[in-house]
Length: 256
Ligand code: NAD
Image 1 (tube, rainbow, N blue to C red):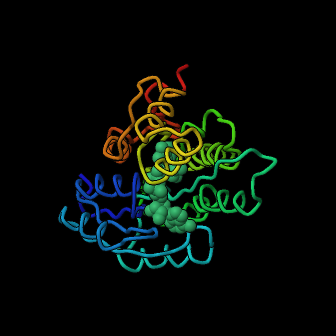
Image 2: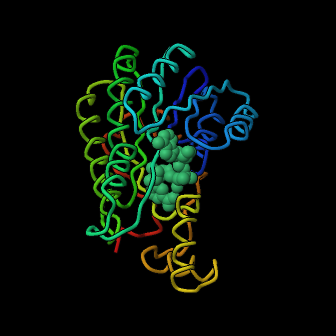
């Protein structure tokens, strides 16, 4: 379905981003990977799906590196047809003790990077008359939790950016939507499980049960594969007129 198209997925060396990159590659899209840590493993996993893969290590907190990533992608594949703004970090602390530099980093990576990639990707999508922008927000783009001020602020902002992007392109073939997962067991969440286990003297399984039990009625994690399938739907013809939604996949979290 996506053969001949190119998808850039930011923060795709791990977790949800890698899951979405693989789901889009399975539909035939060439992939630009981005992110830190092991690169060869993710590159091999995506290439095994029979598509072309490139990697750029831009730090998504730095606008000039984002510009380099976008130029690199355009030079390598001609243009980006599908942009998945996924890179994100977390820090958990009450506001009065929240380190200002962590606030700045979260706003830069989880929110401002999506503005920069979007502004740079849109002209080619508009000229082509087709494009998909998918923003990885969170249930925390819709509701709040204590001790996650920067993350909740950034994700609410990202849902707002999603709506504006969708509206400004509503009469074209360019759509923009947000995905709002509840808990997904990735390295980002394992850190929170480890912190809970250490603070309360719990085993890993006990900490997982506590975390899921607090807010996620299904008491199960959403998987990167399930989120990848939703991204594929947004890219399918059935998604042509889905514009500006914030689609939660959260085990019932925000239904409460
Ligand atoms: P993860 O830690 O597994 O992956 C994050 C990715 O972002 C990695 O590839 C990492 O290298 C990359 N990254 C981090 N900082 C970066 C930077 N400055 N520049 C470039 N890349 C950078 O996390 P994840 O759980 O897969 O999270 C992916 C996205 O999904 C995030 O935006 C997160 O907020 C969102 N999300 C996650 C969950 C969850 O439960 N895991 C729930 C809702 C939303």
